[in-house]
Length: 288
Image 1 (cartoon, rainbow, N blue to C red):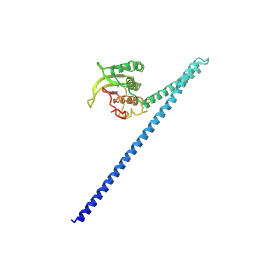
Image 2: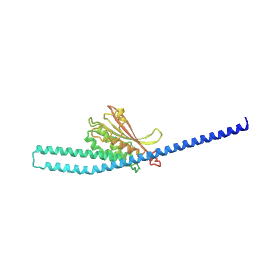
Image 3: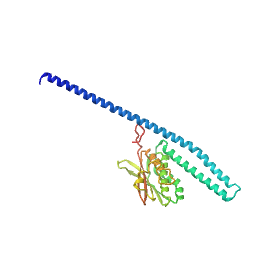
Image 4: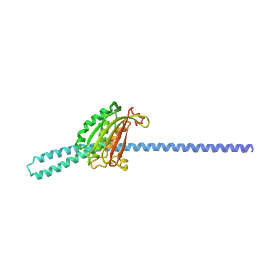
């Protein structure tokens, strides 16, 4: 091979190398640009979602306030009708209609309250405390409601302290939602509701506290289990469909989780798993 051929080959190689390098640089630039566009689209979508949530919460507040006034006026009208000098049958009919109005107003207020609880931001102020004490206080509060529904409520608390960093108010709200859901599930056939606390070690070796809420209700099939944490999904005629999703949000805000096991015809067990150590947060404020 002559010197000319060697020089020509080197030149062609250099030219090819330059072309490949240029192509790679252009491809990298396009990829980087695509990622930037994707991030920008995600940011805008997140902003729009945040705006919609804020608008919805504002609308819910605006509706909730006059509802309270409507309910109060319906109650006053009902009392006034009972004092009227009119036939008992006519008064009874008017009172029944006003009582129905009061119930519907209260139902709508409950739906709005559940929505505001779910849509609102969750600020957890975790303090180390005995989970047994938190659960015991909640059981004492909820016992009259369970008894009124014909449900036998029992608590089996771990004999020793179960200390974990929690926001007691948020934890009670989450557990209360689970208790209400269990009682509502047993409405047609009241049974037993058992709450247990215990220490445990998770699959990854993490020390946790578990709170088990077990009912003897109708249970759920696989299709229902897949949907119970979706907002507004409910199998109950009077349910808002936000109790369980809100409970999960509150527990996840503690760095914990909710596990569910259910068998049709036998009942459901929902387990709240709380880390003993404070949840680690990343720079964006998300639990990890």
